[in-house]
Length: 241
Image (tube, rainbow, N blue to C red):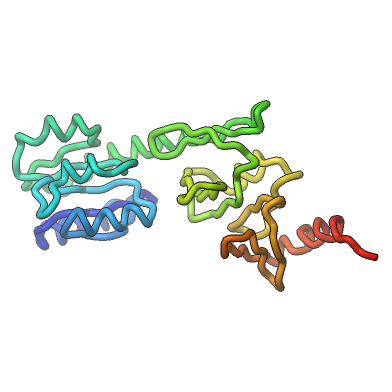
């Protein structure tokens, strides 16, 4: 599903777009916002793939809002003023809907979003581990290089992964399956301990009941299906008399 946000200060416009989104099977509405300020908080804390954004907004207009985002989602601008079209496309907008518009217009914009989304999904593959013990990941609209040893743990969330790194406050979010990541990470350093978690074995600080502490108040659950393999690893490292 393509997760999207609607931003418009007119309640009737929000209601109309909500109805349109419900008719498009591959779109999932995350939130409807009446200001860019509210939308920014959501985009910074949740996965948002696309947004339908009015340009004439209070406090912060739609164009300036998109410019303010470090990694903006795909955007379709909506407005009653055609003079903004050129600047909108300069911001790499997927489409530009001139009010009033109907469902068919919105559907065409949604299809453009899906086409871009599918293209990114195709490209979003992790590379082979190179001689420097690193992988390359496609995230947002850029490719980043990550040292394998810097990965603390990986968390699955729907079709995406959150990759948590040492000395990095926010996770890197990539469109990738847990199975693909598990295959790429070296088994001597990483282990899947839950259907939603892969951990760096060198990061283990404590083990208590059904949880693994990785330090800094980070705890990861141990899944029943993975317990035997994890216990075997611990036993192989256990120091006794």
